[in-house]
Each structure stands twice: as C-alpha cells, then as structure tokens.
Image (cartoon, rainbow, N blue to C red; front, side, top):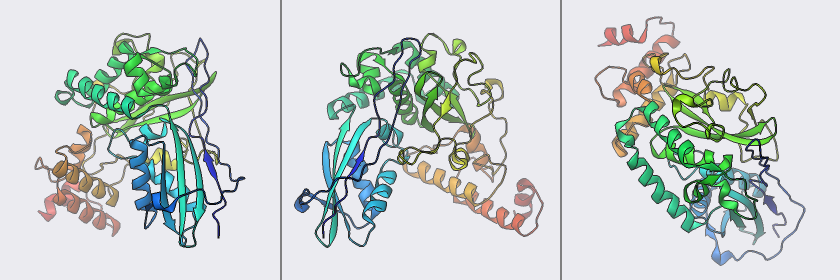
Length: 397
C-alpha cells in the first residue's frame, strides 16, 4: 500500500509592494494531485506515537530552520487529516518568542511527500524559509541586546510596549527593494541586520521583542485598501490593542504615532482612506487563524478604543482574570497557569491588572488557593448564590 498524496503548502506568497503604501500578501495553497512512490527513507524518520509528539518534533525542526526532515505516524491515523493537525499544533502559540506566529510568518513554502510501508505513514517535509539558522542566531543575539538596552524589566507593561514600538519606528525603514534582491526583507532579521523590512518584518520584530519581554502578542494579516498587509495586537490589562509600526515609521516618538495601541473603532481614524481589514476564513489558509471569527476574538478580545494611559486599570474585577464579565473555571485555570509560570519562570505572564484580579484572597501571592477560591465561588453562583466574590470569601474565611 502506497501513500500517494502530496501536500504542497505555501505559507507565504510574494509580497505586494507599492511606493505609497507598504503592503504584504499571503496565501496558503494545498495540492493533492501528485503521486509519490518510495520517496521517503524510513530509516531517516522520527517515529511518532501520535499527533502531539509529531507536532513537537515538527515545531523543533522549524525553529531550527531545517530545510527538510521526516516523521511518521502509525497507519491507524488518517494520513491527511492528521497531517493538518500536526502542522496546526506545530505552529500554535506558546510562550516562546521564536515559535507560534514567528514560525508561521518566517516560513515561505512547505512541500510534503509521503510513503506508507503498511505500518507507518512517512512524511518528508521540504521547507523554504525567509531566514536561515545563522540569521536567526543573529536575531536572538540582537533581541537580547535590545531588551537589555531598553531596561525592559524595570518597566510596566505599557512602558515595555512603548519602548519596543519606539525602538522599531526609530531604527527600521521600509524596504522597497525587489523580492529577489533581498528576501529577508520579510523577516525580523532584515529589520535588524539591514535596518529595512516590509510590514511582515516589522510585525515579526515587534512580536519577537514583545514576547521576549513577557507580553502577549499576535501578528494579524489581511488587507488594506491597496493590497496585503500585516500588523500586531498586544495585550495590556486584559484587553488587546492594535499596533501598526509600519505605518508609524514617520513618527519619532509615541506621542506622534497614529497607529499605536488603538481599538477597533479608532484604528483607522487618522486616515479614513486607509483601512485595516483582517483575513477571515479561507480553507486554503488552514495554518492561519480566521482573525474575524468569534473563537479568535473570544481568545483575543480587542478593545473598541485606544488605550488610555491615565486609566490603565479600568475594568479590573477581582476573580475575572480573562475580563470576559464572568468568574468561572476558565479564570481558575488561568490562575493556575500563572502560578506555574511563577514557580518555573519567576514571572506570571500576566498584565498588572490580571495579577490583581488573580490574587483573589488578596495576600499578594498568586497560587492554588486563589484558583480554589474561584472554583468554590463558581460552584456557589452556579447553584443560585448571588454574593459578590469579595463577600463570598469573607463568609467562607
């Protein structure tokens, strides 16, 4: 029995460029019209027991910018469906700054060929990246240097975001060169080494620096009114805000920026002729999220209006860690996650307001007792209780 399908996946197509408006485009195409026989050497394969193990292996190979690698799954799996699951899990968000979106938007093209020997499906992935191992080593070194130079650890979340954003708009210019001259223009490496990039490179550098600083950040791709484009969302005090460093490169200071920490209602208020339109559902883009879906927006709630530095903790509610208006088991899970991060990493990975919301018993420590209190309160209100969390804790203590 032969595995006779080929999945040819293009993560990113050629950039759309204009002199007036920096632009970007992306496409993911899946082709299954070619057959392969005896193309994959089983001896070179990483034999994986399940999708999760395969995803970890693929993620590591992509992080290391390996040009090709092979993994296998037992024939009891669905060769096509589970390949998609492996790829989705391999590029899902983690706390590491060089994974998640950083991998997705640095991969140019992936081709997959496969075989089956009756026991295993073998997948050989050939990958073309915008950068190589040495270039990514340079990025890691420069990111560490920049984070140190900005004294990130001494800043609150807003200070961190401002310092990173200001660094980018003052040190990176837009790269109008042809793609075949400098393909790294679409990477954080191009932004750092050449001091020039297109919006993809701007967004990747912002993402990398923000994640390295312990902030929650994503890259959003879509369109403006003249072509493809990419920008970022970043979290502070439980909500995400929109940032487009590419369109702010003519500003010198945060106070001059027009696309910094904006909301959905005012992101494009400065120039109504230029619109950010996030990409929606597309079956050919299975690696990229539907940025307009309820699922994505529930996980990444975006503020309607720009961040107000004079009211940084507005909306803080004790116990409501994810700021969704309800106190439930999800909040308890986030508290336990923060507790684990504090125990292992020494930082909670939460905003200042989230930390206040998570410290339910107000003992200045985020731990399992806070999660237990939230679960107890959730059980209480689920059975008809109507006390506030503060009053409930007073009663049980």
